[in-house]
Length: 266
Length: 294
Image (cartoon, rainbow over the protein chains, first blue to last red):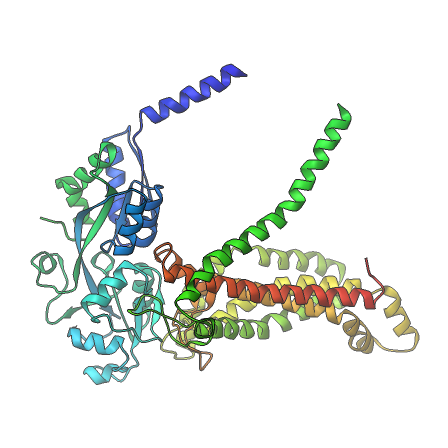
């Protein structure tokens, strides 16, 4: 009996010694990058193991503060309240910008609108414009679709487009980028917003203030509604965490960023 | 040795029996502890009767009346569907179905109960909502109506199987006495069996209601999520469960928003608690009435 226990303990120690297992959690916007990058990273480094989870920016940062994840994905900067909580627990969080993202406004493919101004979008989302005909479209009720007000994407949208004004209460609220894209794809009167990576042929992206959202316009800072995507770590990254972040910021990682529909840093 | 074993086993079962109690107490304690801090920033009255839910705005607004209204709205709609369907199928199973039909229908109803709610949600989102959107020419298919429809179907097996139990509790002698005084089958059913099983059927309805109001995944997927007090059955709504599920992941732990979500959970718990106590009370009274007290 004793022998078995000793062996189990030794095995446990051995597993810890080869370390290599890290947990990455957070933003659903960053998730496709995180997943693909982890996959390739593990293929290159068979000894390392990365567990990737979604949950949302807030969840990732909360887990990091509680010490249950090693990398927190976030589509927004950390909030002062979160920073304070982390420092209370003696954790000093470091931000790493790993990609840029543009928030694309999308409409149904049958919609003839090719572009709106930020002012018009603001009027739509604050319920002063309710029908497409008021902004030069057909006589069709606008179905406003938004991300849940606690999501990182919503926060960026609210800051960059709405000037922090409140979204009309009758807007359809969805918990994910995919949710918005699939509703817009089958609702003729709909308008919504998603990360660049979620724009497909099933929906139509429109220009904002005359600029189409794409890699070029985001990278050159011409497209106004863009934001950095983050990974947070505790202190200066070390070991596997450092290896992974370096990999993601390096040429191979940034290629994945581009392949997943986001904007590489260089 | 044997006696020690017996004592051990007895102790083990005692622990398992009291585990539920411990879980319940634990959940209630945590709910209260995490919910109460929100009332430092918003009065209970403003929380319950406020009509704007903007938990992340500056300054935030924590009025959950639209969420409560949405929950009650879709639950009432679901009742209009699951009560006739559930009670109807219970009556059919109990009174009219032959042995063969019963052998088929009962398991089918039970399987309906075991379909995971995400499957209902998916079905609602991909099939029912687009269909209603086209058929009724709605701006969008994710509405209170769609949600009620699906919740109604989901709650039907609960209502059917409890109502069927209630019917089977009615002693044979009642039916025989009714036939003996010359009543026909219809009269026996409407004047004797249903009144005798009435409180059991009410219990079924209340438990169906609990099922519908507590359902989360489905409402998250098909209700649309607009925090408005619904004015029509074709408005998109944001029931309490959907608000909690959608926002809990993103609310910073320990923030006012986080505590507000716990407070919603507490209100929801109190509502279903009242439902369940009512169901228990009614069913106990009816057993006494029939002389079945145990």
